[in-house]
Length: 150
Image 1 (cartoon, rainbow, N blue to C red):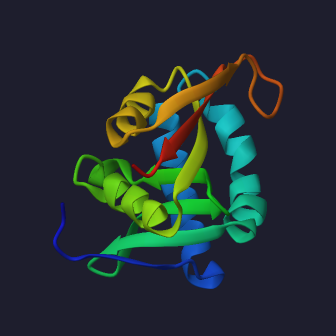
Image 2: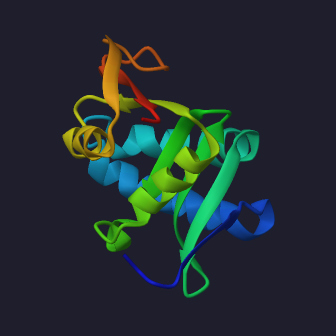
């Protein structure tokens, strides 16, 4: 993990464009089954709704945002790391931060995003339930996962 990683609260004027870019680039890689066009259509929702409505925390190295986590109470609504910085412990640091604030965490993940499912599984999340469509009613299966402090 980067030794100069810091976490700070989201600042809309400072962070929206950068976090939206991280979300889009990471989503294109993690969710190719959704397609670039649909993801680009959803990007304004990330900027205008999801980032501001959640308790969003930004991971940065050397003053540059490299990832973020959005919490709705104890539900992880989003966790994304810049593809150029993945595999450096940033996602785990964001999970550690969320876990430091809650005894139970939940999230939903596309089951076709096998890398994310495995990442959360290594952290200790287990599948609680599944559904065959996403929030937009599209036929992309989701798993609801839960983590409980031991």
